[in-house]
Image (cartoon, rainbow, N blue to C red; front, side, top):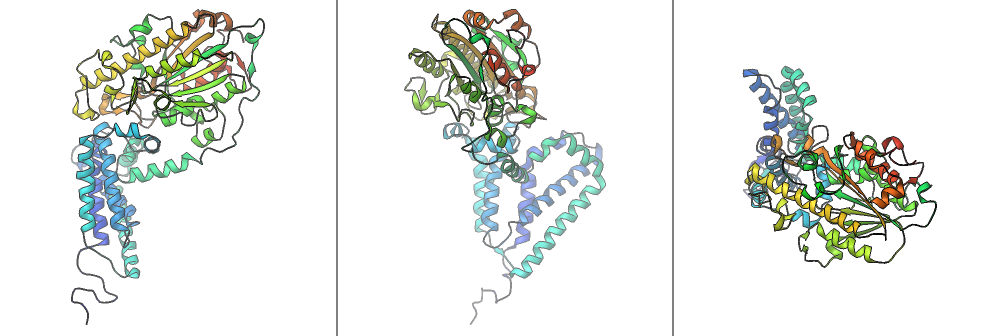
Length: 552
């Protein structure tokens, strides 16, 4: 006897939602509640006015809803649909937090930054506001979804129903677009950020792009670069002390907040009293560390940079090693992203038992301490140290500097920047720049202490900038074509000792005359080679910011 509540063989269970109804419900929720940033950006765009404008917005909602329906239909199968939708809701809730709270976009660079971060940095993002998003928009709806009864037809009929639903969604796209094709084409072309804001298609596209561009893992054998590198004419003649070049890579430091470049606040008091050259018109290769850091050490340039190419090719550090330098990377951030793969790389939190460090990381002065110890060791080799700072990495600006450097107040003591006023955020960020000023000036002092033992120079350049609320944007990582200047204009400065200038024949007046020249990360590779007089076919004088300021 058949159980009264069990469907007959070959018949669908009449209770609960159909698979297509569940797909439509999820598509509507994702197009609305989880994509609020999309609608904010769309309403701020150049859409039609009056009643036609509201019809345009309604048509755009139908397009997002229908495209979501097509995408989620691919997951709408017995045993897969509910857990897959639950995962989509939780992840979309997390991405909505960043889009709504920080003005972030979800593209391949954002995915790369998340996947390549470490536990320490990841913990800094945790907040009650993020928990509210993940629980309220993710876990609770997901739990309700998993408890929901969904009915499925026998597979031939279910397949037919799925195909019909997807066809209906595609027809809906056509019907919605037809009356507004010109406006939609213009909006999509002029506001490319919109495709990174509609959940969950933004994440699906970002993952696809990340998989496409990330390429294979680092190969064991790479394409050589600058294997012919050798010292130029400056290396001839009488014996001399060893060369020492310190390249400091900043983090999230923007040019707009350096008083050396005209910022009204005194964020660079120590460097202003130091004989350095500040370059005030420099742009970055990317808007996140995962892109900018490897790009700035490669010879590919921003237009030619590709992660797969970078991984399969030597870079600036390899060329310096070919020329006979001992090269070391000292890291107080999240690693070199492969730039130091073939040279010595040390993580400060792992090698330093310093009061400047705790379980959450180290203040950047730990790099100064470590460099002092390294320079105290005997040795006669020419050396290049790369010091990778944690700098001004947000949102936990208040964790980037000791209390003594909390000069600009009141500050923001939370990682949920939306809980702080613009003044508090700016004060906290400016304090990180003030501390960076102290660290850099102290490094110069350490190099001066070398006296006649070494011939030192220091070059500082940040990886990208930072938004602190301008235009509703926070942090960094915006797509480069739409990124504001705050995220792409970076500080760069050079200090050279008198011994270094004499050895290299460097004309300080010539260097100073270059300080307003338009430069970028593309110049770092060739400027460093020219600075230490390394001759190689990989060197391009046109990209050397200091070409002509010293004998060729």
